[in-house]
Length: 102
Image 1 (cartoon, rainbow, N blue to C red):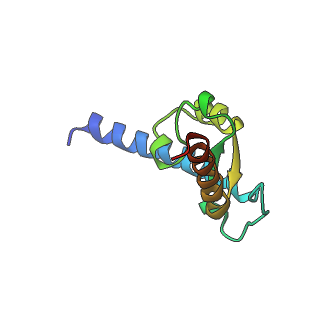
Image 2: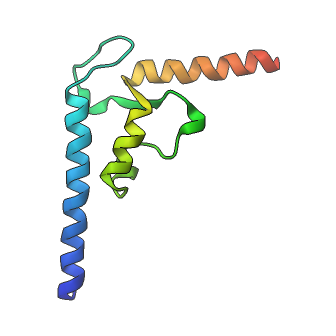
């Protein structure tokens, strides 16, 4: 691998690590906004309050996105434990299905 490629690889890995650590620190200072669960904050999930304003999912796939964009997207979200997050989506789908009489 050339010096330039090696440098860019390390540079990108460092940027990804900074974003990952920022998100993990953010989660570590919070708990589920529904049930207050905070035993393993690293698995808290971002839930967009308004789906129509969602630009991207915050998580492993967002580590390549600039930190300022991630911060702006995080403002649109609440943090939920996996259980509460699943219930919100389940209830949302159930409500839609009941309205459609499916």
